[in-house]
Image 1 (cartoon, rainbow, N blue to C red):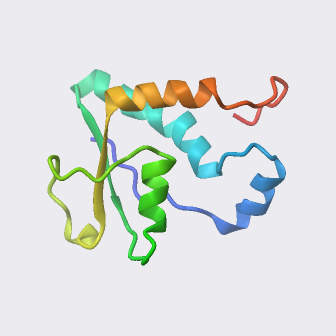
Image 2 (tube, rainbow, N blue to C red; image 1 turned 60 degrees about the horizontal axis):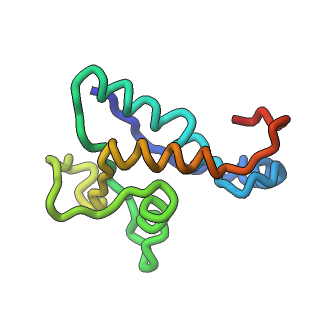
Length: 121
């Protein structure tokens, strides 16, 4: 099983990343370029249908949940689920079908709008 723990923001890099003026957050780019392909590698080996996460968001405005929903396209799904470890007990379960993730990834990079000379990603 492939497991990614603590996909978080490093506040020390935000100013540098903003200076590139890409219009996309670092987490968004890392997710699309490095993490999403790993889901498909696992899918080819074991045939999984969903990717899921536990959003550690106790904020009143659900900032992190909204980020995962709007930017990374995960959704809270009451039909699907998994065993939740005690460590993640207060976290929101979110998931995304890998078939939808594939479409989202293709759309994301087709509309990324970076200069051809830009080799950041």
